[in-house]
Picture 1 (cartoon, chains in turn blue, cyan):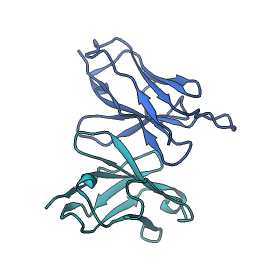
Picture 2: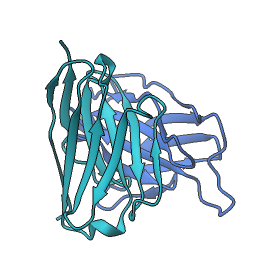
Picture 3: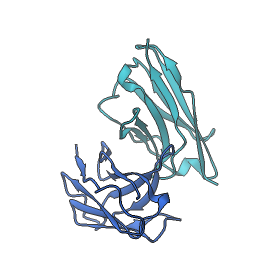
Length: 112
Length: 113
């Protein structure tokens, strides 16, 4: 199984500052078709997870351009520029290259 | 509006069965693969099972293989998860999802005597 490892944030993050969340996969998620099979989700308190980024760097519909995804085949970063109160929650990376689908353990973002 | 509504959760004794449903609306259900993902209380996300649009391809997490069955009825726009031989560690909020998005609000399953 592909193991997804997420880094922690130095919480709380001051409002207006940027925050970067890291995620590593135990196997390259770069497919021969050139796409990287990585999603990022945000789960706000008391809510269902929502998709932020797919194919490692494509923002989902309606997602603020303050969110951006980048990375290589095994190392990924979700950057939130100018964090706001509504960004509070737990962020998860997920690989969908192969089954079983696997998630990182989550990274909590708190705002100061 | 795309909507997924789970139902069928509840309190069940260990070893018993429960069937979850996920009613889809706002999109052509038969065109999409669907997933069940669960979240134990205070824990992270765990993928449970996936089914392709025509039910040709089905996958399970090892933790539920042989006990859970994912299925769908495209005529009824409904996804199912039949859970048998339930264990305490199956206690979780069960989400259905259309591919990666969106997710439903979840159905709570508690396995306890």
